[in-house]
Length: 263
Length: 261
Image 1: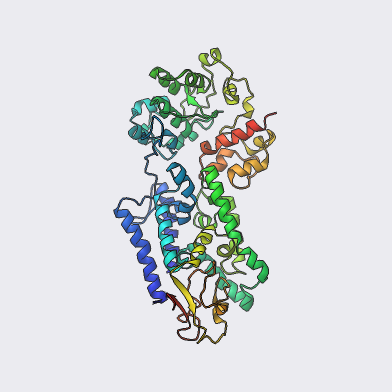
Image 2: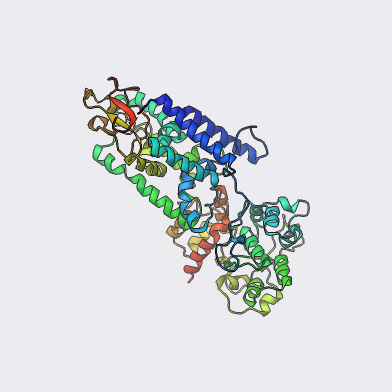
């Protein structure tokens, strides 16, 4: 059986667009995130939606709908701007809203809040932080373990500076409980309570030069980035944003390299 | 047909940018290029198998296009490369300029031995991309992908690594036909494997062949068709340029067919 170029061209178009049309009709074709996270595959929470799969492209409304958390609680927890519909705020904008903070409040914070709000299993990173209001809401739920409460004590960030959140540059403020309960914690916990120099914490303002100064090999940074680093004075978060990557996704890996290089 | 796909992807990419700023062209997809790249499906296979999720920015559409691409490849070989891929088309257009500049020397600058070795580097690229994507869970290849860069020159998502690779590819295309496809394209590497078992192949009839080597000279991938009866080279892109229908001057000598003939 022989084919000429015209028949081949027709077959390619028919198979390609026919496949797209068929999968569209079947409801399989999607060019955007479905806003439905993966489910836990095993354990007590098997079958439940897994907050670890929440993406920066989700809005707070998506999180509220999928995880059945009142939007008011989410808005209060993350101190969302009062002049916007909280349901329409995308999680990735948290990194912009709180970009001036020395610690990162972003998508990872929402994952943590959602999981612990619902009592679902979730292992936070040392670099994960929550607004103080979010921590208070979780405490009020009364279902956290002592370890989780200790984590909250050391990873709560006070956003309640007097300026509006979009203009404010509030500092990390340890809660009284954080000071009182300051049990020995991992490096980042200590950093939050001021016991480890803040300047070894990867934040939204950290530059590549700072990583190099802290002793992180350039090769290690490039391995995480998957490419060469730009001008060393570039802010890491800006570089990642320009490439369409979420800072919160790679922050943990970078912090791990910083910790590894600790003197 | 190549012009159609090039224009379609360019318009969709422009529409994606417009849609992000609240505008857009009606009745045209505003999907991101990641969502329309079948290689995105390939790199997310590991994560999808391990966790049931896609790599960041990859969606169901990438997976579906990957399956369609594989289906086409099993039937006809890497026709996606030869007939659809806009970056391949872009390189071909530059190649026409290169042919005018260098005449017969065009596409023959690289010594044959070195060229033969370099043809396998795309499998190294493929392995590296798959490993890095699996390890990081992010689409790191986008940072050096010339295809993504070509259609995002106006976008804030443009990565400097992609611009550099695109610039190098552009320059090399003036000397070598489809340099990215030959030496670096990881998706071409995947599809190239189909040349070993595809159903429709390039057949040469040695009984009628006059060995004028027009097919060899014509082949953009420098495959020596005149020395084969059945083309199984992993670099064949099924462009059909070597066939009697296109360039071979002897009728029914080089044909695209299934079965023994």
